[in-house]
Image 1: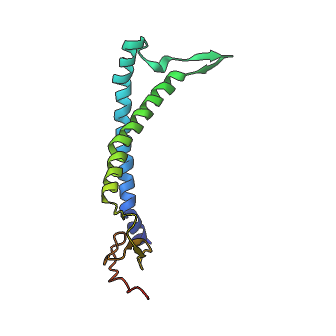
Image 2: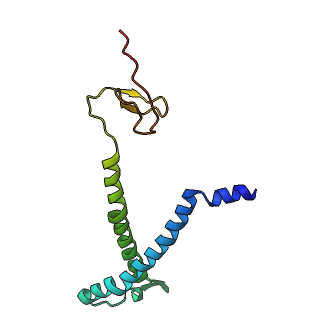
Image 3: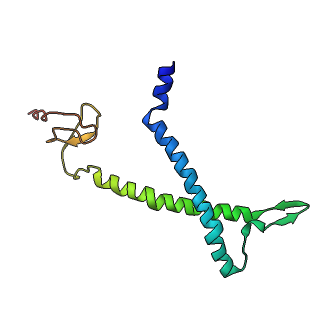
Length: 140
């Protein structure tokens, strides 16, 4: 049982996930500070409101603190933009570069291992890297 637990803990994707959570939390703290210390004062210089967290209104004795929501929304938008432009776009560009694409008129066959379409002349599958050997001769 301990061996299985150790294998579970030391799995690559679990460790990667733990690192991602820690880095994401730290990045969130940095962006929150950026919004509170730079973006909000910059908006205050233009619009005159220094701290959004004090913004609220009251209806029938219920207080709605929409200023905190504005700060959280700004933080979310900045984090989402940073992740998109610094992670998603570069990874998509890298994958598009490395992804093997066939010409439209290239005859293909099916890889016996992963069932992906590969060129007839291929000796190794570009998707699973299995050796597929020479293509069978066409039947008359």
